Every structure is written in structure tokens, then in C-alpha cells.
Length: 139
Image (cartoon, rainbow, N blue to C red; front, side, top):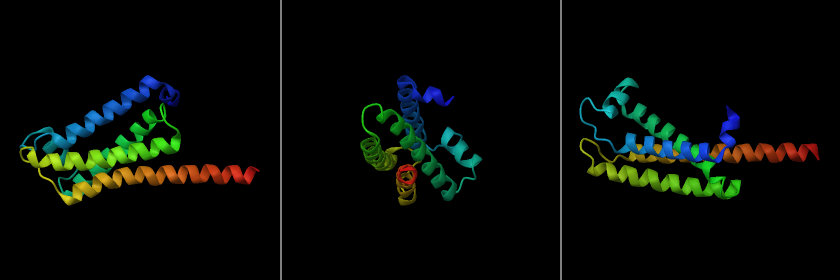
């Protein structure tokens, strides 16, 4: 299964799929009975559970974008690029919700979007720090 992630087309497909899913969940109207309302209700329907969903959406989005970006950039540059794009997309989609029926811009959701992106950055930094530490111990 992991060998599939080495294929460029799979990486690009996953990045595009994550983008579509993130945009759907961030920009669909919140009218009663809609996918957004049902998904929110399934997980509890509170602001906290909605914020958790934003965190996981943007963590997943940034992770899949990173896989695609490493096809074009070094690991460190890819991390910076996808984090910058993730922060911008999180901000833009949250501001765009002001114009979507039965949705609104909230600071909690914006911070949750950014948190998802930052969690990726923390994980990336920790992973490469551990790799460097292992390499130094072997030498």
C-alpha cells in the first residue's frame, strides 16, 4: 500500500482529492439536512467538534499536498510551500464562508484551519530532527 504513495500520479490525485474534500466541507451551505449539517451532527454538532473537523481536514490537506510537492521541490522547501498555501487556503475559505448561505466566518474555525497546517509543520520538523539525530548517533 505504501509503495503506491511513491507513484507521482497517486500523489497528485490524493492532493487534488484532499483539496476537493476540504473545499466541499468548507464551502457548502449549512442548510438543514445538508451534508455539512449531517456530518456536524454525526460528530456532536458543537463548535468544538466542528473545530476538530477543520483541524483534521487541514492536516490531511497539508500532508497530501506535501506528498505532491516533494515531486517538484526538496523536502524543506515543499514543507514551506504547502504550509504557506495551507494557511492562505484556510484563511480564504473561512472568509468565503461569509458569502455562503447558513455559514459564517468564525475565529475558532480560522484558528482550527491554521492549527491543522501547523500540526503538519510540527510533525515534519520532529521527523527530520529525529532523522538527523539518528544519523549523528551512527557517525
